[in-house]
Figure (cartoon, rainbow, N blue to C red):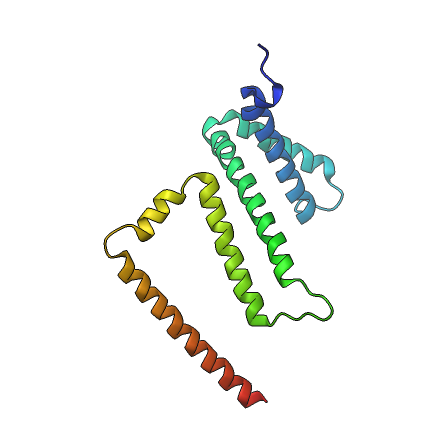
Length: 167
């Protein structure tokens, strides 16, 4: 059976890294105008040379090939977070949510996203067991809860104090 071109080693280990590095180097040189204004041909030649050098060194190429899936997953996670954050923190006329409520919802949203990522990736059980099903975990969480309550009270008092001075 014929292998699809998009998953063949030639495409994933040579063509894609070359195109990526060529494009990045060309774009950086164009944006910074390091070699002068209107030097597209020189920028393209330098991008081509750096891309070809990358292909010649397997270790460097392998680093790029291994990093790209991480970049793609991270970008999607960041996109999802920013979309959800925009829903919570969006500016509109007649906004009824208090700033503290928006911050709390943002924190809850971040924790929910982290939990979803752990569940989807299959790491939820080890993390949950490490955090809650080991000896002494209850005492640790009680102490964390008390520290959070004390920190919240201090922040509340300081914020109220500053508000009274300015008002």
